[in-house]
View 1 (cartoon, rainbow, N blue to C red):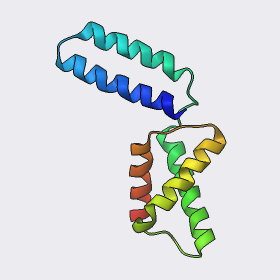
View 2 (cartoon, rainbow, N blue to C red):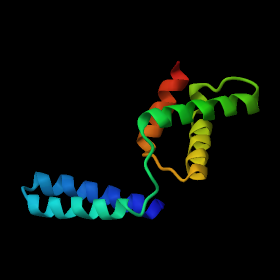
View 3 (tube, rainbow, N blue to C red):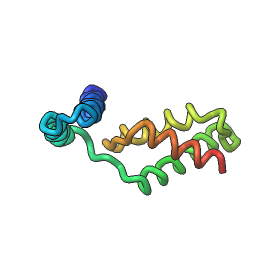
Length: 107
């Protein structure tokens, strides 16, 4: 699954470069490849669902440590979120997960 996500990221980077280089036909070809690759990936979780999953992960971390996690423990929470995503057969962009965890830990 990670390899497929990497392939998509590479194609998005290529689209950006082709667009800057005024090569829309190559950008369109890369976009079409992304559509095909995404068929093989698990369903992406929307932001609302991801926010709920992050809240659950924070509650689990708090229950296991006996105190609410702080922003310094962001990595622990992100690992818990990733485990929940994998167990549910879902996926989410790491950047988005990080932003939501950071926002929820900040209060």
